[in-house]
Length: 498
View 1 (cartoon, helix red, strand yellow):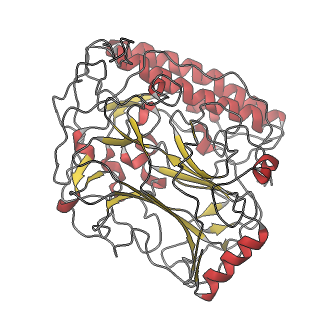
View 2 (view 1 turned 30 degrees about the vertical axis):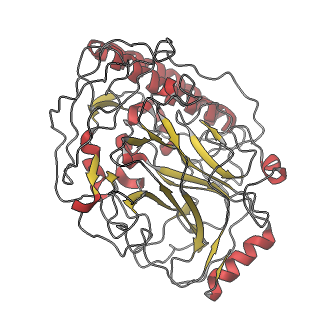
């Protein structure tokens, strides 16, 4: 298999933004209760037609009178099946991968609005995907590749959005983050009766009451730091980059969907590099300003957390926001910790500049839990880590998101076709596989002062139902070489630096 130093031309020309229906499904939960750790996904009735907002404007609507809530559309993830991506094919392949995501989102929206169209929607989606996958295959063949039967990936199905599959997700880091199973089990067959709240929002795309659990009912399942143990390099280096006070947000994803506007279909928070969007080149990143100290121009980003209230953010009717079912007030983190440490039995080496690295899976609800690495907890209870539940924290305790990144690099590539095979997690003993070398492990720890009993959810693709198992984080290393050397020295010598 060929290996490529570059996966995409970072200066790809922008193309027209994919537009979805102006009437998009949005959720405001009407009830939230501690669920005792059960993993049942409640099927909930959809609300009626869209209503009017406080300003008289038509509110986004999920519409419909059927009961598709708690179910979703599941399609094979074509991007995860790619094993090589030549530079010559990358711009066209990335555009069409973005189109596949837009097609699923549009189909989900159509089905939610009219559940009786399921068969018609699936047929149309398969037809559209077949044509798009054909363009991906043609681009790869023109570049000299032999794609593996991608044409078999066009068919999709409807399925229960059941987060119980995430209970056995691999741990985010050596030492364990817990299995997120709380104190019970479930089979996804619940029959809850929640409805929309009468203002045009509906409960068709989650989260659902059983996606939440009172943290006090969860058994302790890890050491308490939410990150697992620290290995041979016992030191650490922390990059201080703020809390996104300047509101750098967009629905792009420079790593997974370069050159594609609204490639994420959900809003991201950014700290660090101020130039990051779908079309940023490495040169632009290297010359941009930063919110980090010590000249760290790295890009750190993750999906925003929203309080699912009636608050109208500036993206209430925009792609990535209301158009994609992401509504409510964006919560700024109370604290952002970006710490690099050692995780294995060997000392770390410097990571290359412009290395792309990600953790978690934005499509874990339908892809399965293999890459579901993020975990959730509450301050004061971080010996209890959840994979597939949002924690309900007691008064005075903040919600915590922990995102630990893979830390074994192949020593050659700054990216890979599926954005995962060039940087992988160490094994259970903290060792990198043959041919890989240990690099500093990034752990993003985000805390939020969520109001007591407030409803909240992480932004997601519409078809991922705002399930907590889909949480994820992304990182592009743009540290100056001298700063990277400092970080490596601190970690290997056992010092804690910032």
